[in-house]
Amino acid sequence: MHAVRLMLLLLVLPTALLAQPGQQKPLKIGVGLLGAAYVGDLNTGGDALYRFHPGVSISLQFASEKLISPQLNTGFGRFVAQDRDLPAVEGVSPNRFVETPFFFVDFRLKARFLRETSFNPYASIGIGLLGFTPRDQDDNNLLDNISTRAEGETYGSLTAGFPLSLGAELQLSPLVGLGLEYTYRLTSSDYLDNIAQLGPRSGNDRLQSLLLSIYFTFDPNRSIDNSIRGKDRR
Figure 1 (cartoon, rainbow, N blue to C red):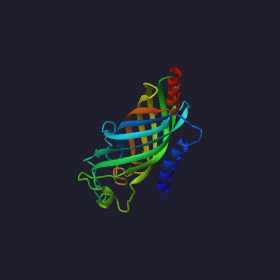
Figure 2: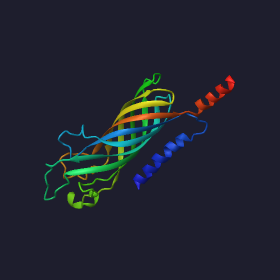
Figure 3: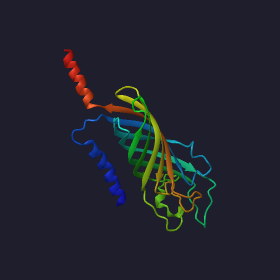
Figure 4: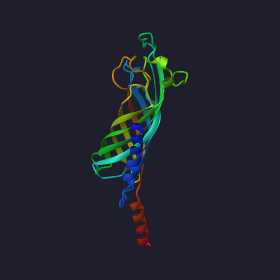
């Protein structure tokens, strides 16, 4: 129930911000390709930094000149991990392979620096939801396979996420820009890989991603200004 309420808040809040009367701020939409990896019980050998898998992300924000502005993000991806040497614990054998498709939606506050130039470094912090479905090598849903977990371990496939991001945007023109971003996503679940108590790593699972985006700015004021200038020239 709390997850549903959070999802509704994440969907309603940005809509309310966009619908504020009297505002005609330029709207910036970003479409990007991301590479995602995870940090958890199946990559304790130090391979978390080079096993990235593709995904897609979409962002919605104002093209604001303010230091801090809101941003809505959504997207999907997956990660794959394997540890053939993961031992059985107390007679229970955890899965040694996992492929986890996931989707996310989050609301962030984004602080942009060097705003007077076309190159804008930024940092952001956010809160959101992460949906995930751990699967084994035969594409079976591991959530239903209780024999791979300690007795009494159950979990849901929806959890909270807390993305922390660093990146930079390059404005190529008033309408088009490029962006590169790294995100470290804390979660409130230790089951992104279906393993918790039987795993060697303490703490919840986390995700990290690299994102390359192209941004399109839609400015109603600019369209009106160009129309007026055209009439003036005639």
